[in-house]
Length: 74
Image (cartoon, rainbow, N blue to C red; front, side):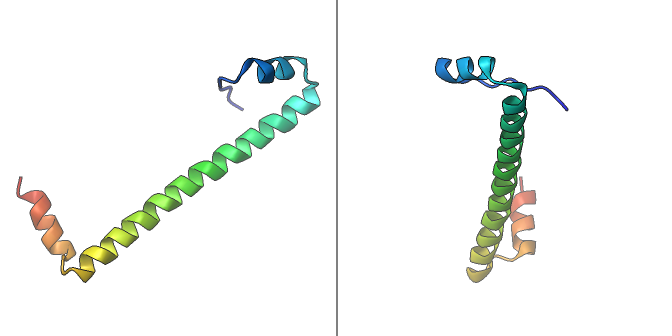
């Protein structure tokens, strides 16, 4: 396990300080799951975006070879 620090409002911090170790463990696991879910959704969303852009470019006649030529002109 690795420790992280997050900022929360005063009310939440107080609840955390006085929570039982069982509640802290359950909440930590919930946060871990939330982080994993959020990260994988962002990554999936990025690749979906890339795929859509690729499709639109292909529909407009921009091939991978043409794109590489443009990128390498610099």
